[in-house]
Amino acid sequence: MVKKERDSKFVIYQVLYIFVITVLALKGADLDLSKVVAEEQSVDKAVRDSLVVLLDSLYKQNVKFSINIDPNVKVENEELKQKLASMNQRIQTLAEKVKEIPPEEEKPEITEEQNLMQLPISVTQTFIQNTWNKAKNTGSVPTYILDPKNASKPLAVIQAGEEKTFDLTDQTEVIAKFGTREEKIKVLPNRPPDIKIEKVTTKMSGSDIYVKDLQRITVFTVTIIDERPDQLKITYTGPVSVTGPVKNNKGNLVYNVSLNLAPNENRFDDWLNKYGDIKDPDGRYKANFFFTVVDERSKDRVQVGDSFIFTDFSK
Image (cartoon, rainbow, N blue to C red; front, side, top):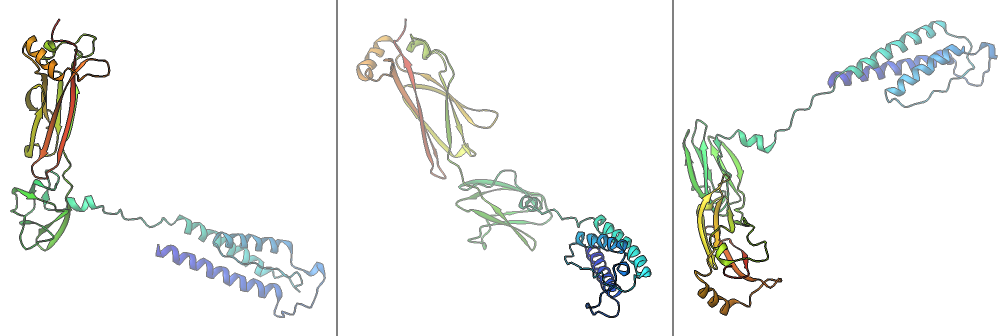
């Protein structure tokens, strides 16, 4: 970059030098513009053309000015004409060299994520509020996990090569201290649990739907999605039979839900006497159930429900 600026200055100095020499040569030692010479004694057109080429080169270098050539000169300076042509060629050569100088390479900006990768701890699970967190020290010195509000009492001290579990509450960030360095690490909010209920049978799609059939099969699956399912309290209400949970391939809890309304037709009639007026828009009987999930650390509470639809106890 410095070399490019030096070459640009050199070109400008050369141009100014040529400009001064040109004016003196064309006007002569006597700068009295009142003297007029005959047309045949004025500057040759070739000299003017050469000067025009020179000015074009100057404009390409962003040098802005104008020159008005006085045709009333006494003698055409052949020697200067040759020098102008030579210097013009040199200017063009220098201009090309300046263009060929490569721009200074920009250094890539180091992102926050790249800085975090330089920490001596490897975060095997994201740091989350109101739950346990785990970190491993891959460095050669102890690492201290500190609360910015109370840095005198470490949340955890992780020796070199060790992994440790520690609890966080409402911190929005923690400090990892290793040796004389400190790095801040963000702590993400603990999101509320998510409950997804999915119907997994076609038995409730026909015109005749029987309680006896719905009590033999899994009608719904209920999936509980949370980053820390071990600290959840899960309850359910309604005429249901529930098995599970089992963990799916994503680590979420899955329950199988069947109807558990009445073991026989007499008990079904008893149910109709109490709840027979609860029907869907098509006039079919309906029994509701609900799943409730409470995060015992963050105190988040979520409830989701669905309905069994049927027309009679059995065929």
